[in-house]
Image 1 (cartoon, rainbow, N blue to C red):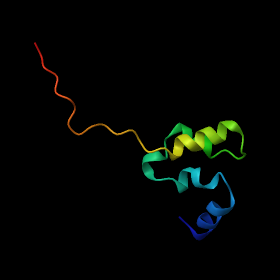
Image 2 (image 1 turned 60 degrees about the vertical axis):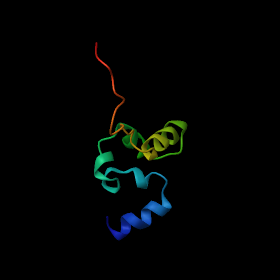
Image 3 (image 1 turned 90 degrees about the vertical axis):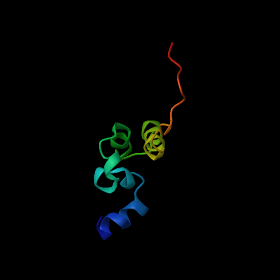
Length: 68
């Protein structure tokens, strides 16, 4: 990330959601693509919330299922 990108993140609401500013695991996320669109409409706000949400976690040891 360049210095220009870092400065832009503080100035523009859509800058943190641009693909080159996102972590690799979120670059292909469709909600982050919508969040990167300019504007502050309800669709962008919802997408920014979805993009900021942590990824769903799966339990390390799923509950034991007894087979019969």
